[in-house]
Length: 131
Picture (cartoon, rainbow, N blue to C red):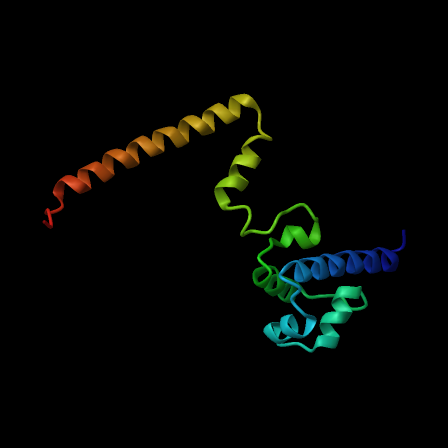
């Protein structure tokens, strides 16, 4: 596939994901999103239809505003960040690892929590009572 055809296909795919994410935010209009990005509505429309190539900086701004990761727009394999907190992402990634590696990580997390609890208890012992 020639580079020009690939580039157009990629631009259309990213543009469609921008539109889908924008519309998922209670029907956020192009005008409103464009204003937040400090670009014209026409330029946003060109991004969404794939007629213009979007810069990484602008795509990043869109990702932040629409609460998605950059992967959502470039790979299509991520959920909105407000629906998937960091811990959930880590747990999902943990499931892809071998069971031996999962056990090693789980033990490390468990030991970290035990240390944290001990340190927290010590700090509480040394705090004055405010009754």
